[in-house]
Figure 1 (cartoon, rainbow, N blue to C red):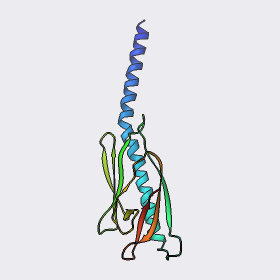
Figure 2: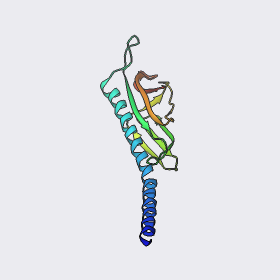
Figure 3: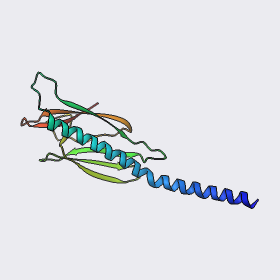
Figure 4: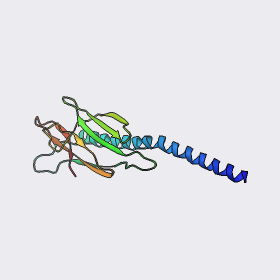
Length: 154
């Protein structure tokens, strides 16, 4: 009888430890996925501006499509409350920000200016849905004719 009680207590203790480990690891797993997404977006934007030129009006614009995952809440990942890329005024850079459901926040510098939809505006790209996302980046001229990476809506 004592063996069964000890086995049950040991099982409950191990399940409690496993639950705590999952609670501690889920934000880290989500952050890792978001860091990968930011790196992929930055690499695509950098490749566009480094290897491509703005096309004449009668030619298709150079573009890259980036596929990434925004984690949904689960046992192993924390949900994402907010994810955006904001262009920095007067610089060839952007700030990628995210907030997890547990309140964890982070900011990363993206070494390319990425604007949303309008190449002459300084609009923030908001990436809000969970799951697999596709972001199309297009190289277009800004109001001065300089190349700028524009995030096109899906």
